[in-house]
Length: 410
Ligand SMILES: N=CN[C@@H](CCC(=O)O)C(=O)O
Ligand SMILES: [Zn+2]
Image 1 (cartoon, rainbow, N blue to C red):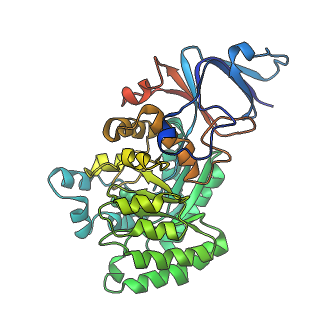
Image 2 (tube, helix red, strand yellow):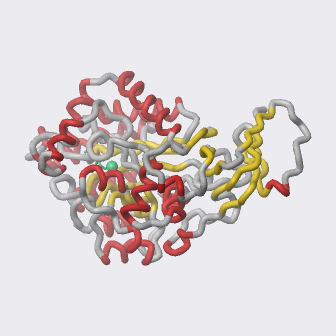
Image 3 (tube, rainbow, N blue to C red):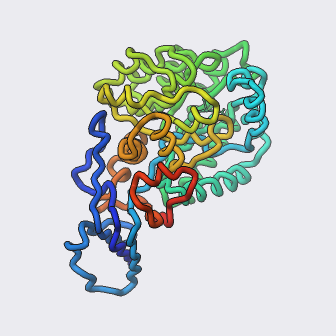
């Protein structure tokens, strides 16, 4: 048995059996920290923690690794509940086009964007996609990500969507961290179906979903509900078909426009609604008393220069805000949740504590991982982060761009 004792921890963050599975509104500011603490793990499972004064000493030193965390914090790893980590190639030429004045939507309308990624993904083998995604995930873990969701959606043909999902399945098997798969066949209409949108929806429902069901390739179903992409009615068709084979909805809504997608997604029992750069009082009202987690993606706002989600307004309305990276080659070529933490504080005026809850407890809820992730508690095995020596917890989002993580125990 591999035993690890982390002692003299400057601050053990978010440790406690009583920490709730979802943290709403004003409660998001509450973040428990045990000062001068210890944490004991056996084969990754939390077997004891608390103030150093309560530490009983070690009786069995065999196979024990002792880590002295003087001046360092220990945190539950982040949960990334929204990524597109499997993709073929980066898209920096679109980045340059945006610098020159084109918008994301204009680039997409001239054949760039999602269709650009789909063209490139079609050319790559399953093995090549797996290798590239594996390297990305290794990097994400070193940044403190302890569980993540990965979407398909750069295939847009039966063959290529299934290829993506098979890659995600292999990644699940390869990594010790939890990975969940989301089917996003309804990410964009392929060129061949530009004039026959219903034909593509039929392809998703009649050709893709049966293979996904037979091979158990997905946990969730997603639709990009947006002008020039999928309408609310089209989203409803796809989500309803997905639900019939047990896929719960997690959807892209309100990135550029307000179309009623949030209300419909809530009605269909969505686990989360993601993006929300644009939001109305009606949207907020729909989310009150719903189990759906509003998930904001500030790195996307930063990178393509669109508004940041109004987290403060959501919290004032007692909603449980989650944060995720949206890691993808088009709108967010970074899966670094430390940077997301910083952006949430600087641009969305979330306190460091609120943003941390949004990256852990509420993010775990957005991925239905509340039982295992988001906090440190007895019996749990989810990854933990050990920081470098830092003056305070707020220093992490404050000193953006620096790497504050020394080690991630998976
Ligand atoms: N908006 C939809 N999908 C991705 C971007 C896809 C792309 O541009 O490749 C997002 O969440 O930002
Ligand atoms: Zn996305």
